[in-house]
Amino acid sequence: MASQFTVPSFSELVRVFTRIGCLSFGGPAGQIALMHRELVDERKWIDEEQYLHALNFCHLLPGPEAQQLATWIGWRMHGVKGGLAAGLLFVIPGALIILALSILYAYAANLDWFAALFLGLKAAVLAIVVQALIRIGGRALNTSFKQVMAVVAFIALFFLNLPFPLVVLGAGAIGIAVAQLRPEWLALTAGASEPVSSARPWGQTARTIAVWLTIWAAPMVVVLLTVGPDHVLWQIGSFFSQLAIVTFGGAYAVLAYMAQEAVQGFGWLSAGEMADGLGLAETTPGPLIMVTQFVGYLAAFRAPEPFTPLIAGILGAGLTTWVTFAPCFLWIFAFAPWIERLENNRWLKGGLATLTAAVVGVIANLTVWFALHVLFADIAETQYGPVRLYWPNMDSFNVLAALLSLFAIVLIFRLKWNVIMTLAATSLAGLALRWAAF
Image 1: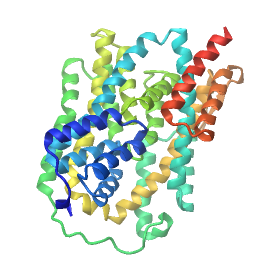
Image 2: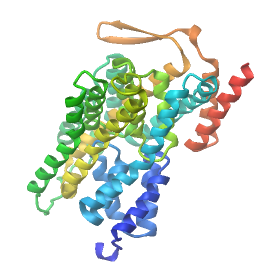
Image 3: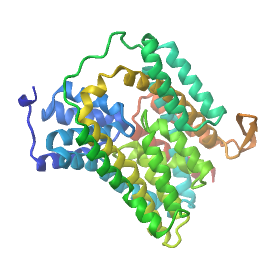
Image 4: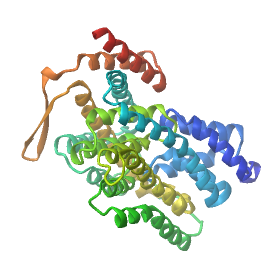
């Protein structure tokens, strides 16, 4: 089957993925659709079955599935060289734009017009997250058991403040057990996994893991030897390295954990600034998880010693991007030879199905958390034993934010505007309302 399709030259692969990297707006769905049109429909580099097979495989891995799919396609065409080219070109355009916007944001954040612009941006982000919750919930919660798992995950995170990795990995473990005992609870077929006859490339996998673990850790060793484990760069690298291992279920799944840790745990930025970063990531090409670079930039920018704020911010952004995406190449290069075995493994499918259901609860947690911090300036937090409750100060209710959020909801749900148009409209509306108020 593969012989009926065109294998591009390496230069052509670079040219096409440069184009894809610059046009990959719209989140994972839009990026996957763009690659399908460019590579399956128009150029016929791979066929439909191979494309979907690889996409299912990428869903099994932590990290941004669209970027990993691009890496897999490049790997299949030209080995590791092709995978590096395709994966990097998918990320680099958006990374450069986010870096430039982060620099602008850090220096202009105290200006009134800039605050008004980003008030509209935050309102649009709230509507976008609500849309993501509804879409993902509609696809993932197709059994009563999955619906219960989503509710349990929400309670565990929002009210009990349990660690995000514990919730995600716990859901996966439950799914593995349920897949064996009650596969119908997960809408899995009851038969045995399909036999796979391909060889087990243990040696190749071990060598690949060793190489990429070294690459992943290299900048952290430099940070440890130069500025030490107490510096913000070490905190940034350690936190986002951990995040890269548990980013199952897409960017929205991990954003709640990242936002709460960055805001409440480390104090790197405010909740409103976190929403601003997500809005910037929504408007740029590349994976939505690039919002991590915005967080890394601000964290280092605000604790720069012994560097200048600008240099520290750039180092923080670069380190964040490195430790976020180096693992993506590790997963693809190490496990791509196992793709057929992994996709046909029922216990792995069960774990992923339950994990995806829990992700709906994770996104619900993000939605409520964002809504509280966008609509209220003052929120108290009270602990009753193991239960945590948020109490917004009604006097701090932001009427302009509420009006802009309703405007964004109308644009997205009623008028069916896309993300870019909605973000632009609400940002301009924020400016107009702020000027009208004065």
